[in-house]
Structure formats: structure tokens, C-alpha cells
Length: 75
Image (cartoon, one colour):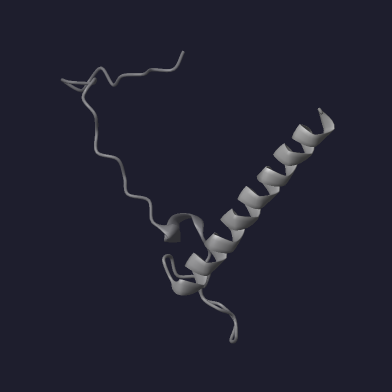
């Protein structure tokens, strides 16, 4: 049976600080370097904001079209 508590510890129920995981622990070296000519992703950049506006506009427009289709077919 798995031991959930270390009984040698005076307070086994207290939370222990978690080890901070860095990208070096699970990614290969060079994962964040892109080949020349590729646009590097930056959160919050104008490129990202325009792309998100286009994506959400498409989602809302598509949802409205499906609702309208259901509305017209049920008349």
C-alpha cells in the first residue's frame, strides 16, 4: 500500500514547497528559436490581437448563421 504520509516527519500533513519546473526540464534546447523569416510569437502583440479579432469574428458569425439556419428550417 502506498504511504501517503512520511511518518518520520513531525508534521506530515503540512504542505511542502513545490519544485519550480522550468522549460529546460521538459523541452529540448533551441525549442524557442525559429528559423529566419518566421514571425516569433509574442503574447499581446498587434499581430496576435488582429488574429484573435479575426478568429472571434468568424466564430460569432458562424454561430449566428447556424442559429438563423435552425430558425428558418423550423418555420
